[in-house]
Amino acid sequence: MTALHIISFAALWLGYQGYWSVKSRSVKASTAKEPLPSRLVRLVAMLVAIGLLVLLDIPLGLLDDRFLPTGEGTFWAGFVIAAVGLGFSVWGRRHLGGYWSQAVTLKEDHRLITSGPYAFVRHPIYSGLLLGLLGSAIAIGELRGLAAVALVFSVLWQKLRLEERWMRERFGTSYENYAAKVAALVPYIL
Image (cartoon, rainbow, N blue to C red; front, side, top):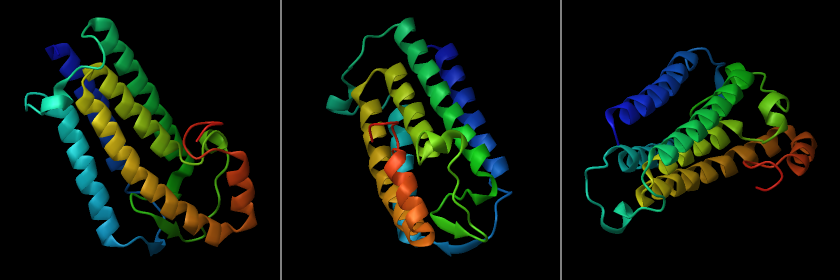
């Protein structure tokens, strides 16, 4: 990777993280929150995934093998996919507003959001984040990137299942009807 590649991805991901940091200050109070151990497992998995994507000089055996050829086209295709994914995630966050939380929570006066990106998938923040990670993996072109995506997918899937259970308990038939019409992560597929 060239210096331009590194700077481009650093700016993209740091901008994304910066947006999240600023917006996390304006959320509604929680009435219920997932246990700390599940949040810690997710944090460790995310840190490992970031390490896989960033620490490219650390040899990891088979994970160093390429699944895509090296080249400008591969890198910039991955960059665009990552930018689109992170943009979709930000759209989901903006649309969710004060109901967002890093942990699975129920908020005061919690209401079911089904418009905007939530009309396409039930978890657009996760969908966008996963697409952002997939774009990063494509740009890197090594199996370590796909391992990072798989790791984050597995912890987000567990978080999603907990959220879904809480949403079903809170909103009952309304959530069941919504879930029957709108896929969880990939429109019309998953």
